[in-house]
Amino acid sequence: MKRPLFVACGLRKSFRGLLATDDISIEVAAGEVHALIGPNGAGKSTLVNLLSGLLPADGGTIELDGHRLERLAAHARARAGLSRCFQVTSLFAAASVRDNLLMAVQAHRGGSFWPWGRRDSEAALVDAAAALADRVGLGDRLEAIAGTLPHGAQRQLDVALALAARPKLLLLDEPMAGMGPDESARMAELIGQLRREMAILLIEHDMEAVFRLADRISVLVNGRVLATGDVAAIRRDPTVQAVYLGSELAA
Image (cartoon, rainbow, N blue to C red):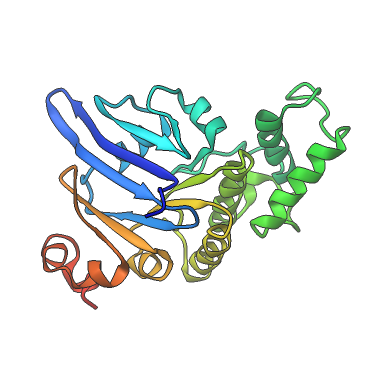
């Protein structure tokens, strides 16, 4: 069996004696979309914070492409190839799409200009920013102010900022939250394109999107992985149906 690109093994985290994640293990293969689903309070946010380095784990290991990450800070994990989009979009709202992307590219690739000074003198960075905008469908909105973009476009920009790190594994934390049908369809199409270039761990409540996009699904309940399998296996699993949105999973 081919070794997975990403392996989290035995992750544990407690808060004042309350066990939030209990011996969680997840594997993601190269080119795979692995969805993480579960009810509110299941431990999904805690797990993603453990994986991305915003929280230290009490135990367990994290490995990406053969390199151990669990002792690394969040920025070092990003350099190692693990990039994250947050549930709440984080942008420089008063800056243009281009400037948001230029700052992200500069942060990950370096450059000689001062962060808040003129950046358009470095053609390579400008080209990289434009390429990222094209990649997520914002090529015609480079001069738009980020804070004035519709919600769906802001989420697309957030994905582009994460892509500036050139990740091997992209963590998407509810990328379709708050979107209408058209915006959700555009985001689903983008995720479908990105899977050709990187592994994706997708946390999402939109079950229709999960069933359409995921190669495998892990169901998290009470801080534990209840089941992992392909879409068909998860949909017909009686325990999953009983514990988490049974009517929707069985539809």
